[in-house]
Each structure stands twice: as structure tokens, then as C-alpha cells.
Amino acid sequence: MKRQENSSVSEFLLLGLPIWPEQQGMFFALFLGMYLTTVLGNLLILLLIRLDTRLHTPMYFFLSHLALTDVSFSSVTIPKMLINMQTQDQSIPYAGCVTQTYFFLFFTDLDDFLLTLMAYDRYVAICHPLHYSTIMGQGLCTFLVTVSWILSCANALCHTLLLTRLSFCADHSIPHFFCDLDALLKLSCSDTSLNELAIFTAGVVIIILPLLCILTSYGCIGATILKVPSTKGICKALSTCGSHLSVVSLYYGTIIGLYFFPSSSTSRDKSTVASVMYTVVTPLLNPFIYSLRNRDMKGALERLLHRAKVLSQ
Image 1 (tube, rainbow, N blue to C red):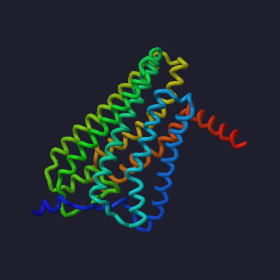
Image 2 (cartoon, helix red, strand yellow; image 1 turned 90 degrees about the vertical axis):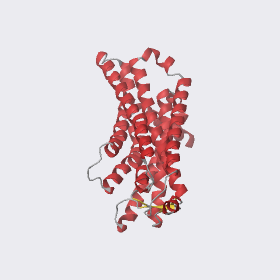
Image 3 (cartoon, one colour; image 1 turned 60 degrees about the horizontal axis):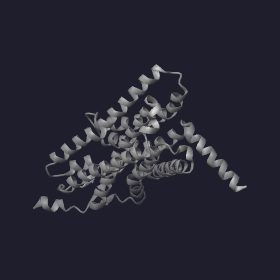
């Protein structure tokens, strides 16, 4: 009877960030500024790619989807965290928690796939430059992105459906600022072996395999560059490789550090800080990385500003 009552839990409590009450105002302003910068920065990337025909290439097609994903990814967790900090209300309805978990997993998976597609694009551009336009046609790019969306949706839906079959214990407090799947499983009174098996399988398919593909792509790129280090076309293509590698290192570094190398005394504080890194900081830095280290993006921004200046005169 007790388990049946617990299975109908109506809400959870998000304990939020490990900060003192007197620091709430400062951190609220900080995260609000970071969120607005993330949204505006990624929307600027979308605008530049949309308006500048020179950026209508496969690489920037993938980048536009990455920017859209980063905006959505941040919007899944940060607004709720800000509301909780402002109102001091830590509750989140059961349905809202499950929904947040679904979209968090969906956009996390989509990020992984898009970073992998961008690495493949750079591999084809540098290792097979003469066949680049033939291989990376619009049809293939659209197909790859569509498959990424479908796989991400299917994986997130699988985890969410497995989550809804669980019952929960009396303690409904989640030691996080969002409904993290791992934290929810720890609150469950049910057998979570099937959920853990699904997480392990998804970890291999969604994280490990894409990472191996990225490393393989850049291994081939490195070998090609060493053979022809003076080719101007390769140098131009590498201008986006540096940006992509920076994003990959930041994104996968925090995820691997959190989920694959946990501390023996993994505290709530360490887990929360690591989660902030890839849910808040990484989407924030992506626009700066791709704009400051990319000549094409800087050129598109300069042309947009010049056009706006001319129109205003």
C-alpha cells in the first residue's frame, strides 16, 4: 500500500544550488545575465547564418542547429532555477519534472550528435576536399540532422517512459537545480535495474560512440595536415576546426568528469558545479568561441553591422 501511495507523488522539491540565502540575489543576477547572453548570442549566430549567403554551407547548417539546441537546452533548466531562486519555492510538479527530464535528455543527445556531424563535415572538407560538395550535399545534411533529431527523441522518450513506471519513497527532495535522471532514480523505491541498463546502453551509443567518431575524424584530419601542411584550403578549413575542438573539449570534458570519473566522496556540491558547467557555461561560451575564433562568422557580423549602419543613415 505504501508503495502505491508513493507512486502517485504529486511533486518534487528541487534543493537548487549550494549557496547561502544572502547570496541568492547575486547568483540570480549572475545566472540571469548568463542565460540572456546565451539566448542572444546563439540567436545572433542563427541570424547571421540565415542572412549571409556565404554561410549557407554544411558546416554552418549544422552550427545553426547547434545554436538552436543550445538555446533550447538552456531554457529547459535555467528559467525554472531562476524562478525558484526568486520565489524561494522549490517545488516542481511531477508532470513538470518528468517533462523537464525528457527535454533535458533530448537536447543533450542532440548536442552530441550535432558535434559529431560537424566533426564529420570537417573530415570530409580536409581529407576529401575534391569530393566535398558531392558528398556533403543538402540532401545528406538534412538526412543526418533529421536522423539525429529522431534518435534523440527516441532515446529521451525511452528513458522517460521507464521513469514513469517507478514509484518513489517518502523523501521527494532532489539534490539538484533540475530533475536529473540519476537523482530521480536514487529516490525510487522500485527496481531500477532496467533504467540503469538503458542508461548504460545509451551512454555507449549516445556518448562513447560519437566521441570515438570525433576522435577518429580528427585523427584522420591530423594525418592529412601532416602530409600537406602548406595547403591554403586546409588552413582555411582549420579555422572552424579550432572552434569545434574547443566546444567538444569543454562539453565532453565536463560530462565525462561527472558521469565516468565520479569522486569516491561525490558530494552534492561537486555534482552541481559540474552540471552547471555543461548546462549553463557551455551553451554560453559557444557563441563566443564560434564568433571570436572564426573569420567567416566575424566577417558575417561585420557585414551585418555595416548593412544596419547604411540603412540607418
